[in-house]
Image (tube, rainbow, N blue to C red):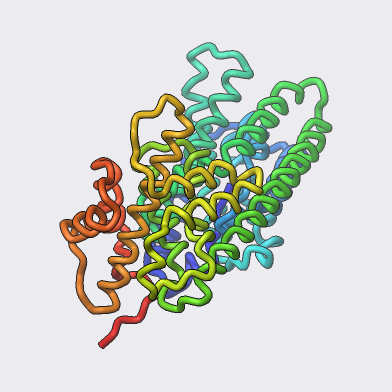
Length: 418
């Protein structure tokens, strides 16, 4: 799997340059070590089959909801681990991935340098998987267990290095990036890994037909997952468009919903909310003001019936089946978080409180940016408490920490008055 941001390795991005140098150097060292210690010969027809499988899976990129392109090549890596010597497997996977990525680079708008760097990262992950495989021979594991262990190591190293690449080049927290990527691709990676293990098992009986048959099944699996992602992206783009509708008549609040959503999801992660709840929280934060269409923010009376327009927005969202949980969070924006026997109701209350606090903090940060002031933590806490009443301490603390870490008041695209 590989992720290719459009400008990650441009000459203007020193972080991307340093990461590229490190990735290529590590791959060269890994490959050199494999050549020195490897004693297996080359089976050219088998290597060509594995290389073709790597090219096919590398060419089938998956576009995630946030626009990132990932490639899942666990099937080809499994074939290399099971059927080829270390040096032959690493060289074959490298050129296979390089070919597939290069042929599809127009779709990803990635540079040849980024293709080289990402292919090198795959080689390093495969080298470590080979190391674990041959080290585990003394454990007397079955063929299936040994293949599963090797591909699990490859998957973990490859996914970890992918998250590290994105976190380093974008100066983002590693845990946030890794968690987001794992939730997006773990199902398809598991499916490809299972096909790879099946390939190792059936190869002795099927022979050369095993690789193309499993590659076709893997391509079908990737294509089906890509269709699922397209539908999900269409949903999210529709929701983002709806979120902008409530801001069209207020130029100074444009982008407010998106900023609140980014903060709310980060707070939800800090509070260990489940992936399903985080998704609902993201949708609810994006649409938390959908019921306020036509409301004049300049009129003080418009702020008195906040619960009314929140419930109106919830009614709109309840008409969409997959937004039911988000609708409850929107409805609970102005409820007090209390002890509830219903776990779903409590999650909705927590989500509503998070949105409420993030909304107030974003307003405060935007106002401070426009006036050229700086909002410190005590001021943010006082602002939330005075505007919205009592917010649970745990939520309030998380919101303030996220606001500080994201440096919303420094990076927000709101012009500062002079």
